Image (cartoon, rainbow, N blue to C red; front, side, top):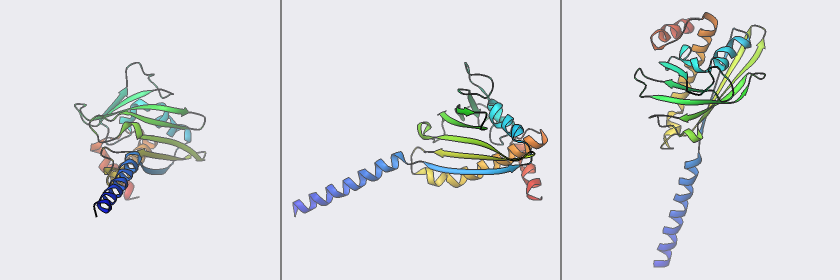
Length: 196
């Protein structure tokens, strides 16, 4: 009886350990895209070349800037801080990697997630701008992430997808009108888009 109990306990602990290890490495994947009535170069300028100025085209980012010792334009190794509130206590620091202007693509490695529950080591985004025709582009954004604790990842997936879809709309608006997007004007921008 004792042997059987020990075996069942051992088996249970083994299964539990395997699940914990698997959960530790698990990441979530979100992809959103948007057709934008603007040439590839116009969209690329906003998302790729003006990397540190994301606050102009993102309704959730209050301010952004290049970090010290970073190039002050989009390129391999450029780093930015994205402030999510006015006092800068909620922020994300990111680095542009695999920058490919010929393919209009790059990755963003999260280097510091501040107080947000993201595991920076396993969290990154990819931007790609594709040509549809001379005056139309497709912006594709993928986000692979892991939360701390890991089980929150699947719970946050829907929220991330909605926020990223809003970001795509904001980029579209900024590229096509030149009007900067923020939390105050985004509600009206979204209403205008929905009424089209």
